[in-house]
Structure formats: C-alpha cells, structure tokens
Amino acid sequence: MAVSMFKSKKFGAFIFFAFIFTLSAAKIHAQEEEGGGFYIEQPRVFYGGLVIGANFTQVDGDDYAGYHKIGLNVGGIVYAQLKKHLALSLEILYSQKGSKSSSADPTRAAIINGTTYYTTNYGIDINYAEIPLMINYFDKRKSHAGVGLSYSRLVSSTENLVTYPSPPPVDLTKYPFKPGGLDAIAGVQLHIIKGLFLNVRFQYSVVPIRTSLPPYFARATQYNNMYVVRLMYLFI
Image (cartoon, rainbow, N blue to C red; front, side):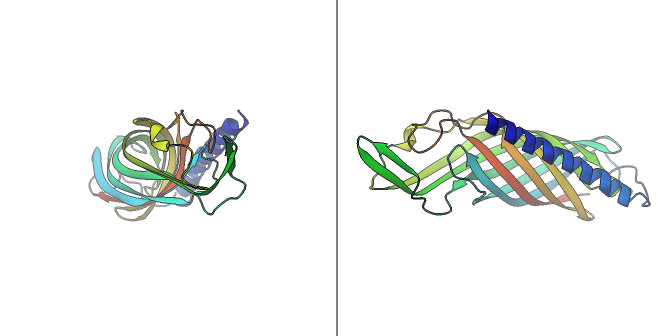
C-alpha cells in the first residue's frame, strides 16, 4: 500500500508540473501574435504527424530499480482541435518496454529445496501495439501538455533469468504477461520550429501486466513504469 501511494503521488506531481510548464510557457510568449488554429496560415480541425523516440523503462515488481531498459517508441499521431487551446490526440504506436538488471546482485537469492540460487542476470522484453488517447492544452506558441490513457496489446515477450547454480529452478514461460494493458500518461510537447516538437512523457500501468509468479525471484504483481523522450513532426 505504501508503494502504491508513493507511485500515485509521483504521477500526480508529474501532471502538476506538466501543466505548470505549459502555463509558464504561455506567459513567456504572451506578446506573440495569437493564431486561429495550430498555425495562423492554415487553421483546421485535424492535424496528423509522425513520432519517433525512446522508452526508458523498468518493471515495478521485478525487484530491480532503475530505468535501465531502453526501447523504441514509434508511430503516428492525429490531433482533433476542439477549441482554440484544446485538442484531443490519438496515436498508434509500436512500443518496446521491459526491464534490465544493471549488474549481478549477490543479495538476490532464493532457497529452494535446500539449494540456494543466486540471480546473476535478469531481463524482460515486452513489445506492444499501443493506442494512447489524450486531452491537450496548447499555449500561444503551440507547446502543449496533456494527460490521458493508453490501451495496449501484447505483440511479443521474452524473459531471461540466469542463476548460479544453473539452470534456474523455475520456468518463466509458464507465467505469461497479460495480452492487454492500460496505462495512465502525462506529458509535455515543446514546440521547436514549425511542425517539429520535443515530447517528454511519464507512463505507468493502471492495471498489472502480470499477476501470477512464483515467490522465489520477484513479486507476483508487476507494472510497467517508464519515461518517454520523442520527436514529433506534424504535417501542417
């Protein structure tokens, strides 16, 4: 319960600072000319673009801390402008998540049937097709912040566990990841030049990605936890 409360406070703090960033940017650029849409030249309802970047991920519940796993985050995005400073965004992404041990940890051990097993290497690779839906607030310079949810479907997964002595006493293929997932998202998009944005977001599982594991090497309930850094180009 204490861990869940800490994660909730962390996510809430990120949302708060995301909106503070947007409001500050709006104040800084208050003297700029105000457009009728995303851009003054061609205001319209829908805007599409491409995104590419990296996920910095960990899996809460594998007993390893740190965003050591780096994966691809790539796909397309569409904005639907609702009001002058408000728009919905829908993305279709290929997203690589998971975790990676930074080094062997001699304290990670399990005693099974009288034998002590030490974990020397561990890693999770989980690939998803992902559909984030977000509500975004835009400042006058088109930088924006948003919050939303992301539905994902599992494409593939692999898990690597190396112990001493070997082989490991558990077959992890018997404990698959859930085929579907739901994440909460908060992020900011910084407008660099016309059409080009730098995006930073935080994303965390709303529901567990797995709930059945033996108690030897990890917790039974696990969650995706990641930061994303991307470039986005809108065709405008």
